[in-house]
Image (cartoon, rainbow, N blue to C red):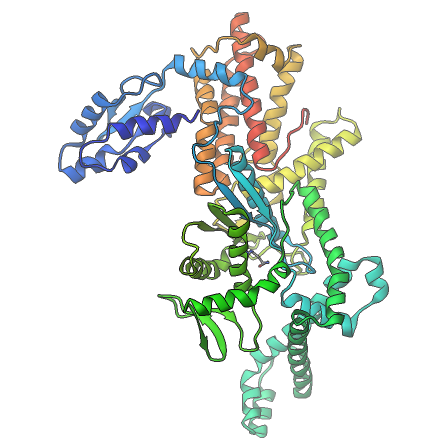
Length: 618
Ligand code: ARG
C-alpha cells in the first residue's frame, strides 16, 4: 500500500475551492522532522495566496473537511498554514503485521501497467569498456528493476555501437598494423590496440594543426618564407621540424580519410570488410558479456546499430515524403525550431548516421513493443542530440510515447578531472571492478577473520561490486562525482557496505536468538510501537512503496538509496534504544524481532533493486 498516495487522494478530495486538486495533493509530502508529524500537507499557503485569504484559516477549514480515516486523525494546523499528519499507531501496527507475510512488502499491481523500453549500457564495441559505461549500465539496470518491481513490463535493450566510425578505424588498423599472433592470443586487446593507434595518428595530427594552424595557413597561401619564420619563432615543446610536422599531419589526415572510407565500404556491403566485421564481433561481444555477467545485468535484446542498417533509407524517404527532411548543402536534414543546428539524417556522401539509426530504432520499438515510455540512459553530453531526436520523432508521428533522456554526469578523479589511470588512460571497467573487489577483501579480512578464505573472497566480490554500484547510484545522477575508494568502502556512512552490514547484523540477531524470521512471521506477533524509536522504524518500513513510485517517476535511483540509508539509521537508533533479545517480555521480543525482519527484508529488496546482493555474514 502506498500511504502517501492514499493521503494525497484524501487531500485532493478536500481541495479548497478554486485550487487545482493535483497541485494541492502533490504538496503532501513525508515530513522531514518528526516534530511535524509523519506527513505534511503544504498546499494551503499557495491556495490561500491565490484566493487572497488567510492561510491558517484556510488550513483549519481543510483540516475540518479532510477525511484521513483509517490512516490518521484530523491534521493539525502549524506555522503559517501547514497541516501536519500523524498516522494512527493502530494503522501503522496493523499495516506492519500484514507486511510481515507479504513478500512484496506492500507493493500492489499498478492501475495502469506500462511497457517501458530501457536503452542502457550501449557501449561502442571494439573499444574496451571504460569507467563511464558503469553509469549507463548500473543506472539503467536499477531503473529496470524498479519499474518491474512496480509491476510494469520492462524491455532492456543494449543499443550497441557496432556499426559506427570506430569500426572503420579498426578495419584500417587491421589492414595496416595488425599483429595476428596478438589477435589470436587476445582478440579484444589487439583490436583495442589498433583502435588506440589509429586514434593516436589522428590526434597527433590534430594537436599539431592546433599548434601550427597559422603556419599551415600561410603555406597554403604560398607564403613559404613567412611560414618558416613563424614556425621557427614558435616553441611548441615537441622539437619537431617543419618537415616532421608535415609528415605527422599528412599521416593523420590520410588515416582519418581512409578510416572513413573503410566505414563507408563496410556499410556498402564490401565483402572483405563485412567478413572482418563478422570475425571481430563475436569476440567483442564475448568480452562485453564477461563484464555484464559480473555486474549481474541481463538484456532482453541486444540490437546494435547494425541491426537497423537496412531500415535507414526508408526512414529518410518517409521523412522526405512528410516534408520534414529537406536537402541542405548536399546533405539531408530536418530543421528544428529554435535551434541553429539542423538534425542531419543523411550526410553529403550519402551515408546515414547515428541520428538516422536512432529514428529507425524508435520506429522499430514502437512496431514491436508499443511502449508507453522509452528511457535512454546516456551521458549528459548527448543532451542536444536527444532533444533534437525527440522533437523530430514527435513531428514524424511518434507523439504518444514518452521519450526520456536519463542523463548522467561524469565520474571524476581526485583531481576533479575525468577519472584516469596514472599513465593517463581512461580506466578499463574490468580492472576497476577487480580493484573494487581487492579493496573490499581488505575490509572483509579485517572485519571477519572468522570466515574461511573462500567465503571471504565471495563476500568481497559482493561488497566490492556493491560499493561501486552504490557509489554511483547514490549520487544525483545529473551531477559529476569524485571516485573515492576510501569513501565508497566505508562501513559507516551512505555506502553499500554500510547497508549490507546492517542487513548481516540483523540476520545475526536471529541466529543468536535461536529463532528464525519464518517462525516470527508464522507467529504473527502484534507490533508494539510504544517506543518512539520503534514507531519511527515502522513508519519508515511502510514508506517503501511510495519511495519506489517516486524513484520511478523521477527516474532517480538515489531516492531509493537515500531511503535505505535512512532506514538503516532508524534501525540503528532502534537497536541502540530497544533491547531485542533481552526485551522485557516475550511479546515485546517478538514484536521487535518482527521489526528486525521487516527491516532486513526491506534492505534486501531495496538493495536488489539497485543490483546489489546481500550476505548473511560479513
Ligand atoms: N553507443 C553510444 C555511445 O557510446 C550510446 C548509445 C546510446 N543509445 C542510443 N539509442 N543512442 O556514445
